[in-house]
Amino acid sequence: MASRRKVWGIKSGSGWGLRGFAAGAGAWTNVKTCFIAGWLTVSFVAVGLQPAPAAGPAANPYALATPPQPLNRIDELVFARLTELGIPPANPSTDPVFLRRAYLDVIGTLPTMEEAREFLLDRNPGKRGELIDRLLERNEFTDYRAMKWCEVLRVKAEFPINLWPNAVQAYHRWIRTGLRDNVPYDRLARELLTANGSNFRVPPVNFFRALQGQEPEALAAAVALTFMGERFDEWPDERRAGMAAFFANVGFKSTAEWKEEIVYFDPGATNANLLAGAREATFPDGAHVWLCADKDPREVFADWLIRSDNPWFARVVANRIWAWLLGRGIVHEPDDFRPDNPSSNPALLDFLAAELVRSHYDLKSLYRLILNSQTYQLASVPASDDPRGEANFAAYPLRRLEAEVLIDALCQVSGTTEKYESPIPEPFTFIPEGTRAIALADGSITSPFLELFGRPPRDTGLMSERNNEPTTAQRLHLLNSSHVQRKLEQSPRLRALVNFRGTPQQVVTRVYLTLLSRFPTQAELQAVQDYLRNGPRQRGAAATDVIWALINSAEFLYRH
Figure 1 (cartoon, rainbow, N blue to C red):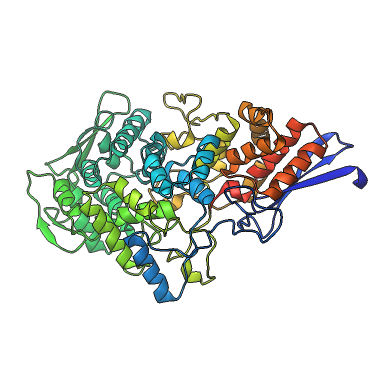
Figure 2: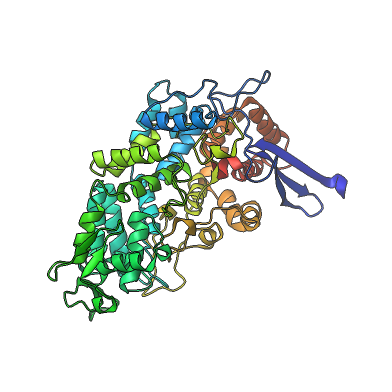
């Protein structure tokens, strides 16, 4: 029987994607995907603008040959720190690498074939900055950012958060609208901290509703984590009590409407009786303040928090955005600020916070500043194996696509949709067909794929809730599941790619631009064309095999 089995391979991404055909069984089966040095290792073939020559040394697949030069103050601070440590930075990334990275990091979406071709053939030296500006104005940028903030703010209808569907829709709409309109971050924060009213009609009051407790310390803990990046439960008792006093007058009451709840300032101090000395409060920096009976203490705290000289507020949000774009925070974890977890580059964090204050808390301007830095645009191949390089951003970090981004990418390249639902619909769940995963409002609305690939439950507001580590079950799903097989074999978009009336080289080029956002190399062109011409099946089925191999490559599955 061994002589009747044919096995083929296409070198793509990190290794050889292999499938085999058992003639006796009369069916194709996945054999394995073999990566040169494991699932996490990426070892691409050349990704130049045009197919690489057949002979001669291969170009670096990630990096340009020229050493990096600072493009803004961020680079000066990062490179100065690397020089101090004796760590050389990686070289700048190539255009195909930057293109795919920017789309995934900024809008959580792959570039289309046409977008990839247009950018790669553009000879304008300022095209990267222009691409960044275009991406920051797209609706997907708002959707993707809202998804990230909904994780921090625990936007979830069902247990254990129990906001309920009406409140979730209102809260998500408020978050998304604020981000779309680029409302200053200090104004958003103040509204979240001081709002009063119905959780259905005054969306920001859901900040205090989206908790597993309504005691003053539970409210203070959420504020400390979200806006100060600190773990409240690690504070000494006196410091916790001092901050909890600012939230002792928050009241909650239900109405006659199903699941509606009113959040309000309770001057009668319904909760204040739980705290000794509740009329005196202490800010986290140790300053004491006496609270007036006729003024909501939350307003006093908000005034202190959003001051330009506050040591937490601007630094924490700047650090979060940096972590979302570069894989880890300058303070890591991004929501674990404490004296014994110092910043890897204090000058850099101070600069980002100062720039945010100078721009009047314009979050989009901070994105633009980071994205246009050479630090962000470095290749993912480090120039040194010094382990300190990762924490000091000597190279762009490899990391797998998030669950939502990955399923959206699979749907995009295949032209298919995904079904999302809640296992506990109250009163019911309806998600329109074609809704993208990054646009889902409710953390309770999910799918088996999202659960398998580590989507966070949104129960705590911690960024570590998301599990992005690859597992055997994930690999098997991508290699062998009927879910992925149906997307590929029944895909009208991929059929159109394969049936394109052009030369085999044009067909292969269209496939690579669609899946990997780059032109194929000469070696890849030859390997794929040989398989399409000499493979054991018809051209359409053989092309599906090629596409499946590319989707299982690390180049497709990872940010790089």
